[in-house]
Image (cartoon, rainbow, N blue to C red; front, side, top):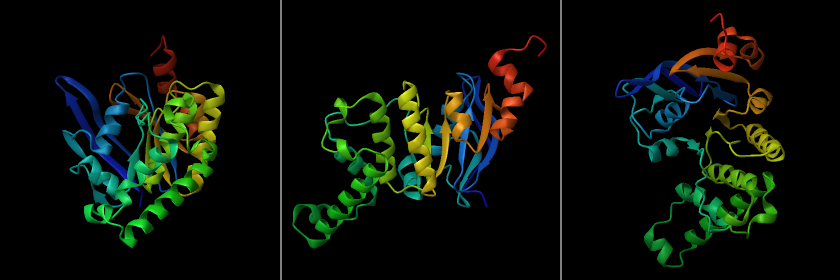
Length: 254
């Protein structure tokens, strides 16, 4: 059974069909990319999966259960975490503090535990710091833990956002244009980080415009155009697909 199934997803804004009968599935442990020109409906589709907006019609099945009606925090509790095209870190918090924010949903100590020195509180805090430090080290952030994120370069901020998402212990990550604004060196670092995440068994669904990155790391690719799915397959198949070539490069005979 696929870990995620999107079935006949539809969403309109006024007379505009932003997502029009889109269906695809993602296998567990896979990196699957969603590509398409600007305005193709990619981010709208992500928002539908993550629960930020509701579909007009369709279903989102995660691990066999329909989650389309759940709010974003409930979907996160099910095991789907996301990053955003525009970085949403806390700039005046350190790297460690930002990563710990991602671990918050796993904490069980309540107000009384926080107000008084219960052993459970100490255990949870110790566990959270150890996990955050482990995630940081796995992504090459261990030297930056005490630095406020506003003082990091843009590429490192992207990695911190990945680390914060991982702190929530997801089974699936939704990455919305993670390479946006990165230079070649930073994109290479990001590629390595994403591949390390895949090696842990986490499934990844990403939107991306950097075709070199997409072709290098993706197991499968879905192509959208004007809200519709026009192709799906292996990277090599997508590169040869005439309809995809026409969408990206133009085709006088199309």
